Length: 403
Image 1 (spheres, one colour):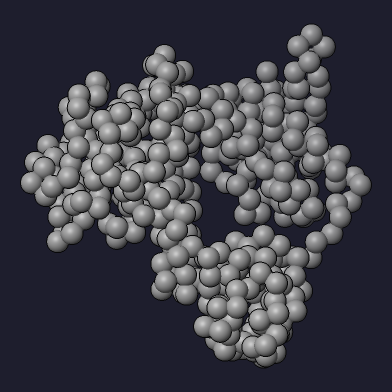
Image 2 (tube, helix red, strand yellow):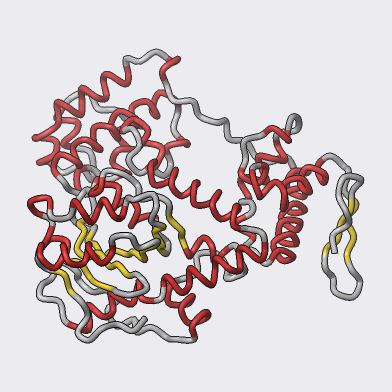
């Protein structure tokens, strides 16, 4: 598709209505967004880019969002008969869910699909366009302030490029997945992405698990952190500011480790603004006291960290080699198959490994690598190295030898 000159720019309800008429009944849409997220709780949506085989446009979200003007557009985007094509779409899908009230389904994420057919993990859109189409995209406006108006034709053309090639890339990746018999694998990954998008609006009392270092706390301190993080979530949402604008993560950790008893103590906590202590000091203390009053049965359950046993380290390295060999053979990114944490959990389980709720032991991953990993740990696998290619090979009574 060629980008029109000047790019089609939707700034009125009349233009949006005309666009929706053209989008209606299209079997698929390429979608992308531009947003500003530095100074608000929910990133501020500025542009929505949309493309079909016949048309492409940039929607100025602030200009058309009033009076329900976008209702018809959201109905089209959320129509289950319309496939939505995105690239690295977690943030886009989350914003659509906020404004449309639901995650648009079904969707196809080209970054995920590309990792499953040999393009490597987390391939950038511009890289994918160049490798599939041979076209180098202009990156001059990567750091554009999309909230500034007016936007130039060059800025709009740059934004529109993010959807101009998506449908052709979708065709290319869909065909490769089909030939490799991996379409179902891709849909399993899209379902995982959908779950991850839903978790961004998780229950406030679970947000503390997003704070780095929470699992190093004692259980009672973790209970304090849980209450403080839940309070911050509500306060940031109410004020529509980033969470760390209210209280930074490291300050919450400090309050959890050394809970103050009086407002004067709060004012002496390094990193906590005096204005925040004055405004919400009593509320913060109430949250801390409530957490401290909880019985041990209500404290968060922390996994006991222990150093891996010496033999475990060698086993994990062996499993990593198997994962890399499986990935090389399948032309798929190793990180997509299993993480080091997955392998460590598999090794340390000792018993009932085959029933563990680990990604390598579920769905398509189990077929590709999971059973081989289990065979290796149960002593059913014979591993050799090809003297010429130095490739790892294995065989077991349950599986045909690898080539």
